[in-house]
Image (cartoon, rainbow, N blue to C red; front, side):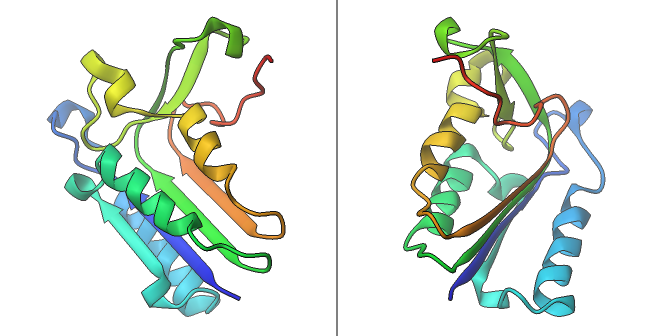
Length: 154
């Protein structure tokens, strides 16, 4: 059995008006809980991304590390603490409400959301590769992003 965790916390965004407090504390507390208190995850199997490290490219890369090689019986945890939002969808046929739910990585830009946000569709595509029998937990502490897994109209 292999247990892996990816913990992402963003307090400081490039625009100081978007700064948050407590997001890094959230993931440090989670690391302590899963590695020291409950001893479910070995420290070497926990990756953390904070502030400047938590770009879209790096989060996607580390999510791929998280799910890579997963087999039935493994336990995976993805925890995100930072800004979230909803943006108009590019494909009205796939969203009942016309909105995509997103998280806002460190390099997020309102001017270019399609290139800088991570959408519910992107998460769904990656997480769909997780084999049956893998216990997967996804925690997203991100305002305005709904549940990031809204039912899609097909």
